[in-house]
Length: 358
Image 1 (cartoon, rainbow, N blue to C red):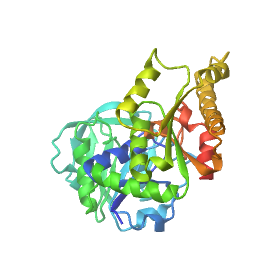
Image 2: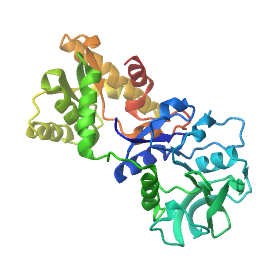
Image 3: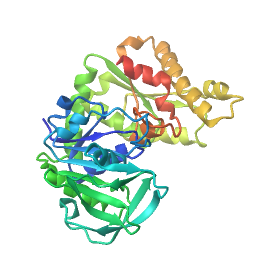
């Protein structure tokens, strides 16, 4: 089994970015609910607690399995995770009215494995209203901001580290080095790379699809095209059919250009349909962008059914493939505690129902 670092998602818009940054460093990551049973994380090499929009002092906080903090492995708490760990070990969290939003200067207080190859002072990115106002006795302060905020803590005996700021964003000037230091502390052996990802993913796709076939929505963009290429590698052209739909919202001649490019790539298992009238009729009279995105997403599913009927294909034999990115999930409020920024057409309820049904 490939070594991995578990990321607990408390609803942060950055949770998937944390996962992405750690993968870029070379360690595989998996995202879990903070209420996960400790046995499901027993094989993780380390655990990261993400940020989140809630306050640890609120009555409506994400459910958290505190036994995860008892696991004998490196743990890193970020923003909300920083505050949750401090509170769990007896520290105090308060809304001092001096929240920090934006750039701040980090100043060294004591050594930490996270500070290897880090120079001080350095710029970090803050986004919090509550603050740790009392450090737990089992911890020591490793960094503060220039305003005196407790910005980083470490456990005196165990490999538990917390950061009030966000090392995963580029505004934290040395954040990547800090995350790399945590990955090193986790002792990850098998390194993650795009080559290993392709190998693992194609095997997983083949196993998950089984005897079914896949109808893949294609937009001409990078996301769906890469997903289509992976599916071709995993399944072969006999079990995969790509469908490009002209929905009426494309630029002039863009649909023709897209189909030409797919043809140049040598794919023979792609069909196209001009269903623009159905989409334009569906959104006619609608002015709210959120409503229009939901209607467009639902119309795509209707057009899938129409296309399969045109070819006399049984929908039960065909799985639906999409190119869905982490930002699509994040902005659509697709994790347990995340808020909706804007719904994406590939994450509407009709699509989620298909995901749930397998």
